[in-house]
Length: 458
Image (cartoon, rainbow, N blue to C red; front, side, top):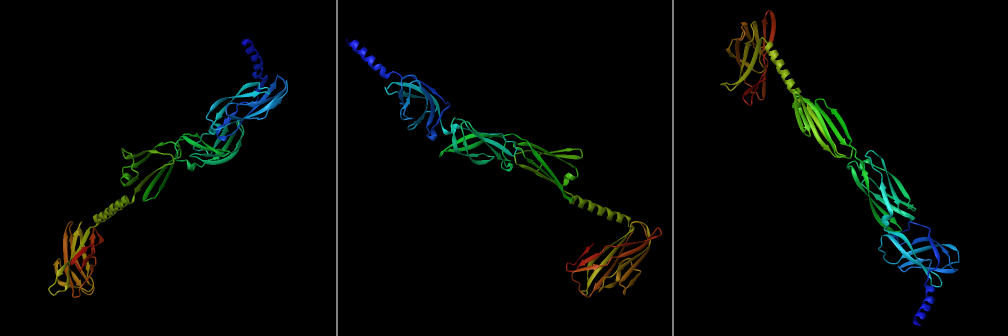
C-alpha cells in the first residue's frame, strides 16, 4: 500500500519539475567581460518554444544580475530573439574563459538549464600596442593601437611615450579595429642612442579607468661615420680632422697621417697618436679609437714652421756674413777702453787692429774723432802719417801688408767735459789696392758706457 502511494506521489510531482521544451541558440560570439569597466555583457538568444504557450523567466544562481527581469511570453511553435544581459555583483576574480550557467523557467516552474561561455579580462588585455622599426636616417615612424576584443570603445585617450617621441591622442575603436598614427621624428633627440630594443610606454584611459601597457620599438643598426677635414694657416699650419658617428652603434675609427722626418720635429698632436711608425724618411701616425653614437672625435695636427724659418734665416745670415768676411781682403777691428787721467779728465784709449787676409798695398787708414774731445800727442803702435785737428781725422799709411799681417794703431782721446751715458765712436776706414783694383773696408762701431766704466763693441 505504501509503495502504491509513493508511486502516485511521484507521478503527480515529476511533471512540475520537468524541463520546458525549448530550443535556445546563441546568435553572437566572442563576448568579453572587461572587469575594470564594470560593464554588463550582452547575449542575443534565439528561443523556439516547442511546448504550449508560456511566459518564461531568465535567472541564475551565480550572483549575477540578469536581464530581462520580467517574463518573456513565447507562444507554441514561436521563435523569438531575446537580448540577455548579465552583470557581476561584487568583486569578480575569475580571469580567462568562463562558463555561465543560467535557467529558463515557465509559469508552471518547469525549467531548462543552459550555458554560455565568455572571456573575462582586464582592461590592459583588450589592447595591443605596436610600432614599426626605426631607421637612424628615417624621419617618421608608424605606431598603432589595436582593439583585440569584441567590444566598442568610445573616447579612448592614449599617451604614448618612448626615447624617440611622446604623443597624446584621443579616438574611438570598434570591435577588433586598429588605429594607426604616423609620428614625425627629430633625429637630434636620439642621435646618441644605441641600436637595440626600446620600451614604448602607453597609458590608456577609458571611461575614467586607466591602465598601462608596455611594448617595444626596434632601433635598427646603422654604422655611419662622417669625416670632415680642414687645413688652415701658413706659418703655423694646422690640420683639423673631425669624425662624427651618425649611426647608432659603437664605430671603430682608424685615422692615419704622414709626416717627413723634418716636419715631424715641429709638429704637435692633440690627442697624441696611438701608434707611431717610421718608414725611411716618412713617419706614420695612427689613431685607433671607438666613437659612440653622436660623439665626435677631433684630431688637431699643428706644424709650426716659424722655428725652422728662424733657424734657416739665422744660418743664411751667418753664411752671408761669413762669405762677406771671407771675401774681405783687409779687416779693421776697433775697440775702446777707459783710461784714468792724472788731471781727472775723461780719457779713452782707442785701438784699431788692421789685419790683411790677402796681400794688399798702398793702404791708407783713416779714423775720425768724436766731437768735444782732443787727441793726446803720444801714440801707441804705428805712428800716424798726419793728424788734422780741424777736421778731427787721423791718417796712417802703409806701403804694403802681407797676407796674415796685423798692425796695431792706437791713440788716446780726452775731454774736460764729463761724459754720462753711452759714448759712440765713428767707424775707421781703410782704402787700399789689390791686384790693381781700389777697395775699401770699414771697422766696427765702438761704444763706451761712461757710468759703468766699460766699453761695448758692435
